[in-house]
Amino acid sequence: MADELKVDHFACLCACLLLLTCPVTKWDTKKVDQVINHGMHVFSHADDLEISEKRTIKNVLMQKNFFDIIVKRIKIENWRDNRKLSIDTLLRKRLTYFLVQFPNACYVIHKSQDEYFHLFDPYGFPHKDEPNMGCWVRCKDIKMLKWRLKKLVIEGGEGYSFYNFEVTSIRKAPKDVLLSHKLQLYELEALQLRERLGRPFYEDVEWLKSDIMPWSRRANQSGSGLERGKVDVMWHNWDVEYPKDLFSLSGNIHQTSERFSEKSRGKQSLANLICAIGMMEIYELPEWNSAVVDSVLVNGDNYFLECIQDISDEDYEISMDDLKEECSIFPFSFKIAFTPVVEGTMFLVRVSQFNLYKALRYFFNNYDSRCGILCVNRSGKKRQVAFGKLRECEYFMFDSESFGAPMFLENTGAAYILRTTTLNRLLHVLALTLRGGDFFIYEVEVTDLAPLS
Image 1 (cartoon, rainbow, N blue to C red):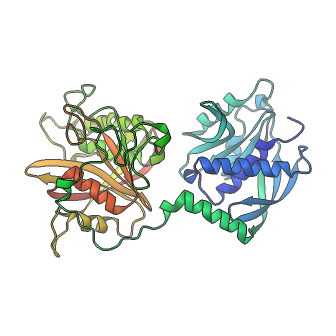
Image 2 (cartoon, one colour; image 1 turned 30 degrees about the vertical axis):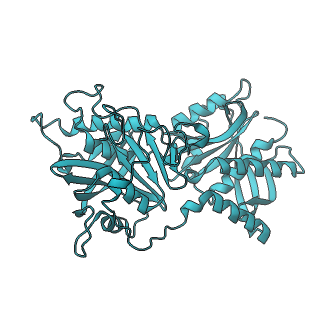
Image 3 (cartoon, rainbow, N blue to C red; image 1 turned 45 degrees about the vertical axis):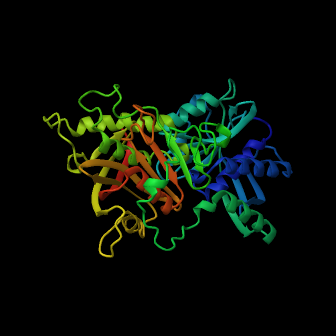
């Protein structure tokens, strides 16, 4: 082991402290920068950096609180004598996070509530012409985690130690520090505040006459005039149609693509929508990209073929009753359950009947998160999309059927997904996409998500 601790050790301690109040799924780049900066601050004020079995650190500032902690070293045998790295042992002791210190670097191992394993790397990967950037790496299982760790070990630096800590004191920070923290929250998480729904915002048929699809790929610019695909004006991998309001992301293939067999081609809509909802359990929306959208269609095609394997009629159109309970998106499997919730007619304003606005309010009422499929029948033509609320002020719509105008150029199409931050905007994009008719809404519930055995 190195003779003295480096900045990375203290950055990892700060990362663990932040995990106490902020789950890893809620982290973003600024939070990673925050713990690294705090780690540098603690390192610069440390009186003794010599490696020891036990260390007391006081007044570590993390968001709204000062922490006093006692860091304890757990001695583990050399890597070459114990190739299992003893991670399994510590996890069996229900340690959800701990540090692993190598001679060249320190890392955090974290097992989240969704049973994923996460590795905090203070050094991260090179990014363009900038220095390496710290990051969390998510691993599907402990085998991948160990493989990742071994790739980080330098030759001759196989020795390691585990560290954990005990919080002995928590104190609120002074008012000026709290004010600074609240300003950061306002900037980073303003969209997480509970949405306020005002007077009824019924869908209007006039929208179809006066409003174009701002997310249409027939235009090279977004609804707010931003150039599509330009990294410095995108939200992660998404085009920004209207800042803090509407975001769009398109895939590269359509469900009628020749890559799919004639047996399934163009018939997979329901199966694709199920896989889109299942994908929400695997990836957060900021993690989505065009490849994820395409993956929905590939997995949806496989699921569709499983659902029709006992149906001999080639022209048979599957319904909710034909969908199998077991579904998979490699490398995960999950179960799905459908519940009919509400039906109505779009653009209808009657006290005793549901239009789409009233149906959405009813569907999401008293739910922090809920997903479903919206089926519309207009003049004998069926149209289906997936939609849902993932958390406060985050909704989505997924469409795998659009082909040609008004969304795409003639004879072109692809699956796409929209992200909105208000229910009213979700209503607006659903109305422009589906364009009226009688509708039925099903709830789709995903359970028992687990790695494929």
